[in-house]
Image 1 (cartoon, rainbow, N blue to C red):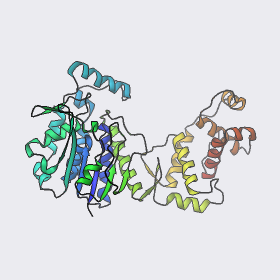
Image 2 (spheres, rainbow, N blue to C red):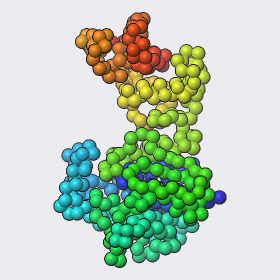
Image 3 (cartoon, rainbow, N blue to C red):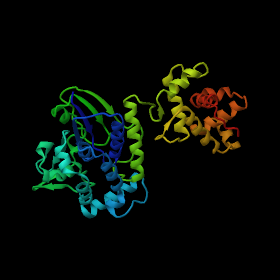
Length: 377
């Protein structure tokens, strides 16, 4: 049975696919075909030649400072868009030569063409207004980098790529998730990595068994080429893949296999949720409210410890805040409400009216008490 890796486009989000690849390597999963659009094509060519560590180095090198010789004012989307927008107005888009240079240094053409793994990419011919779909055997060696760049030129952020008098733009303008291409190349099982980025997606002509891996967390803005953001994306890609293959648990947070189940079964008699899924949802809500690191892999012990550390840093609620909560006239955030109820529970108080109005936060405070997390202020 032929297995294909399908890599969507998504610009800077593409570092997530590196995390997926890391997990696939650990799982010893072999593949026969790789198809990619845009950044998926760039990652895909290195997957074809099995050059994981080259891909790691590539993602370290591609950053905004390298591309622009300057940095945006911040990593906020608006400031990054201003940087790209200013460049478009001044130069007609980012020059792709720097990325081409990195690819020339990273791609081993001999290794790529000698690999038994087939490859396909999609770009869009802006001159003829038609897609160009190429498999490995249709890409001349001397044009490999050209067609990779043609697939990845996210116009208007980047300039169009010209090849033999034709101008090409990002393959995402035709099909940002090349499932159909993988099927045409003979795939019978698909591992689909969908970054959820803007772009068209063609419906495949037939159904093929597949595993779909999509970011469960918010990953970086598609133009935010930033090394630190890339590192986090890699962690999310790794975690989500191991969840997809049932090696880790969790949704937005990640837990070691069975750690949730064991805790749930051992404490079922005192937990508020009748089902394990509800318990997981509740503790993940606590993680979100108290801003725990979503990229880490937790045991129940380390998760509870992290919650304790966060709550230890919280200031005691002042009288005016408590008054506002009790008056029900001011909007109060969930974290403040959870701390308010936890404080009352620790002092054996039960504000019945408020616990009914804010039942979700009251329930989460009860869970903190059950988990042994203390506020004590």
